[in-house]
Every structure is written in structure tokens, then in C-alpha cells.
Image 1 (spheres, rainbow, N blue to C red):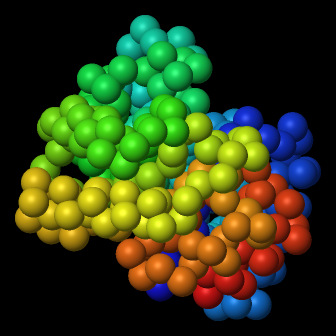
Image 2 (tube, rainbow, N blue to C red; image 1 turned 180 degrees about the vertical axis):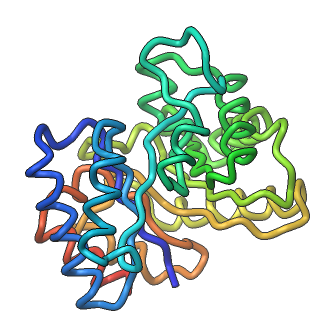
Length: 246
């Protein structure tokens, strides 16, 4: 079964809206007998975790953090540690999203440390990788191999891991991604991971996934699921995506 990970980013602006979107997701997940991982802002994680438990819908939706700190605690104002997330029952965290890398200047070294902290706390890291600019397949893959090697420098092959391939140039825009090239990139990433860690690791596709393009990607078994951004906030989009993935 293909995974669905919704990433709300810095949305929505109220807890009331957040609860409504959770119920929209759960309604579709129940209808199509599928479960969904949803990455919500830090401020909602604990509150929505309790809300999900109260509603008895834990089998239909799991929460993920959108980031975590590479330190366990201390003088790091504004940061949240993997141990804090684990303490409130969070099982996943996105790490290395392009917006963290290129807006907030996170380095490959910092991302590597975050992966280590995440796995030590038994939180499954969702590592995002992808080339910055539209370029040849060879150049893009060389860039991604370097990302993966440096981001997973301390990774142990028996630890849980999800990788999401997101061509950065295609996120949040109207640029067209060649589906067959994206699938070929995912094949290469999976092959590289098998050679490096001697195990199969799920690789998802991201990059402005929505109801207009998911049909093009869904038919390829090489794609183990989808990391969905802005479409994960819209009821009609949520329903369509879950229906197609199921």
C-alpha cells in the first residue's frame, strides 16, 4: 500500500481550522480504508494528538513533526528535540525539507545530526532530497547522491527511514515534471540505497502533488507514496488524493 504524507507547512492559522482538516482527512481515509500521516506545525502536535485519541481515529491518521533539533536540549531558543516529540507520542518527522535547507540554511551536517537524533528516539525520519534546478538526470542524480551520503553519514541500516524525492524547482510552481524522468530518478535512488545499506527503503514522490497530476504518477509501482504540500489543506484535494492512492 502506497504511503500518503500530508505536509501542512505553516498552516492553518487556528486550532479550529486544524481540527476541521483532520476530520476531512479522516473522513476520506475511512471511506477508502487507508491511513494517512500528517505533518502539522509544532504548536498543534500535542493538541491534535489528544484530539485524535479522543475521537478514536488513531488507526486512520498519525501525526508527524515537520522538523526537529539536532540537540537533545539546552540553550537553543525556539527549537524542539526528538525526545520532546517522542514524549507526546509522535512517530515521524520530516527532516531536510527544501524550505528548511534553502530558506533557513540548514546544512547537510545538521540534517545528518537530526537523522541520528530522530532514530535514537525511535522517530522515523522522512528525509527530503532533490535537485535545485532543472538539469540532466545525471547531474541531478549526482547532486542527490551527495545529499544522501552526507545526510545519512551516521545512519544505521537497521533504523527505520523514509525518503521523499522532491525536485526543488517543481515545488509550489507551475513547472512541469517529466513523470518518466521522476520515476527513473526514484529507481536510481532506491538502487543507490540498496547498495549502500543492503536493504530496501521506501521512496516517495513530492513536488506539488495534487489532483491534477497524481494520476500520472500513481500507476508506477516504483513510487512508494506521496508527500503532499498545499493540496493537503483542501477537502476536495484530500479526498481525490486518498481515493487515487487507495
